[in-house]
Length: 123
Image (tube, rainbow, N blue to C red; front, side, top):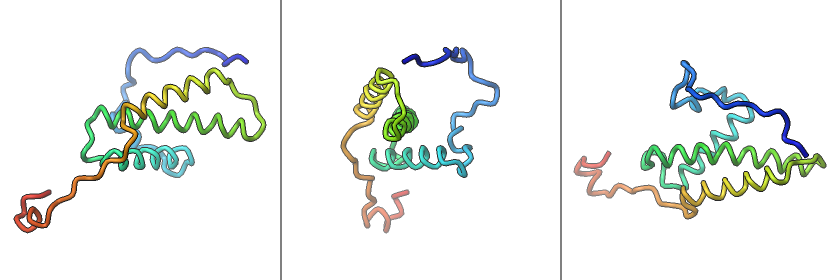
């Protein structure tokens, strides 16, 4: 099965690009709600958004979008539609790699001690 017409990737970022573009998504759409929810879940599992490096946040964002693509392929398969099994397998392998880079185990969020709170030293 062919993948369809090839499209070229942009070589430069558009003038309107912003690194936090996902926060500007229309949250009324199912896709935005699903992906943003998945990003929040993955960030929580990694110890909380406030503890993550920019690199890990980027990997999480990419994993959430790729996870949505995998889910879309699985939904098509479940409804009797054909999918490109090679592309599906490639997506699963890429997603697995992202998840391994992010970390497969849940991490506890840093907890402030009562002493830190009383001393006013904690955030």
